[in-house]
Length: 498
Image (cartoon, rainbow, N blue to C red; front, side, top):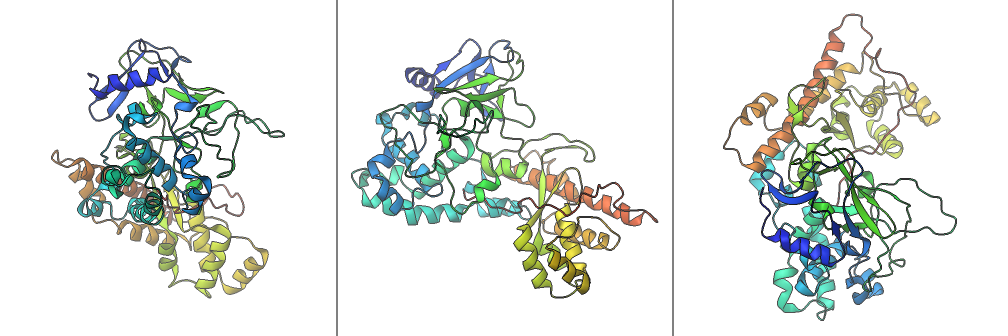
């Protein structure tokens, strides 16, 4: 596990910029299958501080001097205050400064190639058919931002973006590289401090920083500032907040050293905490010498791990599933598939009912998890479409959605939905399991198959459970499901824009 050539230079840069690392407890090394990783060089107790990062050493819209030099009004005019384009442009610009950038020693150690689907060939992407990954890659949206926001901004300030460096540092390919660095390595780092009258938050995910550097920009005019108190800091995760029409990326930051830690399902043994002046990586359990030091990505499904980080997790699954995979896996079942399946049995005006549903539920997909339970929201929609007209009118007047309760009339519809969902994949579960035995598979193809297998196992397990319920003579299909009243509806198939 020898250190790579670039690691000593990075460590020198880190300490020269007031970062503190306990080199007697931790080292950076290249680990096969994991890339660069943090390794415990001795036994480390719980609650031990491994390293500290000054807030000003994080790289974000607040700490880069580009928005200030560009001008706030011009920044807004080009739409760089919305979405990811502004932050990516800051990253590109800082790298174009080379040794003149405050972050040159950090940027030089970041990866320039990725195994994420953003960079896959069409042939490789075809292996993801049937999964929700392809629709969430966002390459088209990213390139639209590049051409409509970033390119005009660059051309408007050739003093900041000299033409002779455009091809090397400001190409669309480099835009994708920087976007992937942010997607895979960033943290949410909110400003420190409270405004008068604000409540203390004892603990809050994420955080970034009012920085003390001279280059810091006052971004109060760009975004609403939030002021958390001391708490835990999580890597930036996919969430429903990503799907807001206008995304706030002012709190997203690159955090040198913290992003050197890898993550694996339920393996977290260290976490980043923040204080007024510094961010601290602190152990959350004892770590033995030679063990990898793991942060957390929030135990994401393999579909998200692949899309964001270019890898998948394979561990022992839990009942009712068996074998190896990712216990956090999920599979999305689109609402239009449900509507299409039930339409031949539906009562009344299907479109009216669907429109009414969407106004109240805002679900265009349902998420099945590894517990092999049918999402109650899906069952509720089936009930809605099967209701006799008189019951539909009554429900409509009451402004209530049907309960997500399995009943005999719902079971055959749910079975057909699951069967049709399984046909969306180009291969069967059995074929994929056999394919994974091939030692010559490329990394990308293997990862795609692992994602497919995880989703198919959930669908197959759920299907078998429902078929067993249907076949049980005189059984009550919902006797084990607690009736909790009108169903509630979390977000459905939301796309990340980056």
